Length: 437
View 1 (spheres, rainbow, N blue to C red):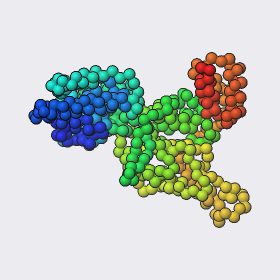
View 2 (view 1 turned 135 degrees about the vertical axis):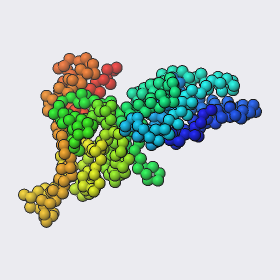
View 3 (view 1 turned 30 degrees about the vertical axis):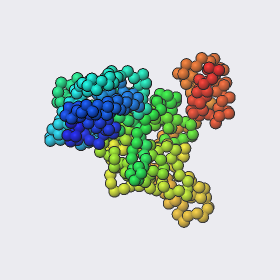
View 4 (view 1 turned 180 degrees about the vertical axis):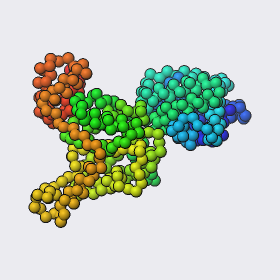
């Protein structure tokens, strides 16, 4: 039988309804089978198979969908054992024994012969999910890399000799890849549940941008890479401000950093200005996890009448509680000093808008001073712009005489926002979209 009610640590599963219904069906089959209820049993089995197929469609699973489902439950469940194993792998103590109890039950679930129930009910549907061939492997919830990891673990667990080997495999997965949403996703956003609770939600579709895709800016990229690598390695690192002209690749650089260092435990949480009040709640949820988190604030700037920047200053570096070592803030902005300045802020301008003008100026600059690393992304000149176009065209396989390519690029930038990396990318996309015309 399936003893899901005897689990001690692994409870409150997402999509746990499938396990609950399968356990009920198995229990009825083994201990209370009633021929008159045969129709209800068949309906329940068909419904379970249907939900497993739906889950495989949304998550990209293939193979034995019952095994993939059970593996998905294990990979997603954050509990006392899984989060501890994420930090230190195997360990001793009573918690280890409690986990072995639960893994023994999961091993029975993997080994249970569902075909016997299928035959008894003359349903003929279990064969559909024991060797499921999924043409759409991308799924909507996971990227291919995550899906492959879960499928590989599921195949390994199906071959485990006993509960101890089963436990070792799952523990190794936790240590190498993590558990739950932070282990299985790379980027997140902050949302509020109905009761106002601050929830960190995965972003399931991430642009596949790499640092090499950002043509030029070698000095800027090196500063960003050096700081990020120090952070990932556990060495001292600084909050980062990427500033400069619009369309120069600041946001793309952050996406590139995420994709480059995700495998080494880097995660990014996107936070908007109106969510600054939630930052302490966010940090409380991530400070004890075995990942390095970047709180990412895109297009950060403030008008002179806005005071939210004062709250952000305190959060970054000013409260009594020490900032966790696994959290940094990376921000992008078109403004070097983030807060709009007026002529009256300057000492050499005689405008009476404050008694101590130097204090006013320092107040506005104090936010940017809290970013230990500032990186400038400048607008490319004509020669640099043409080089970006030339490199991107080559990478995309565009066959066009160079003279014609650059002439068309010049026409495009004059009509579409001027010289910038973004304009170059848009021009290349235009050429690619026009190839079929």
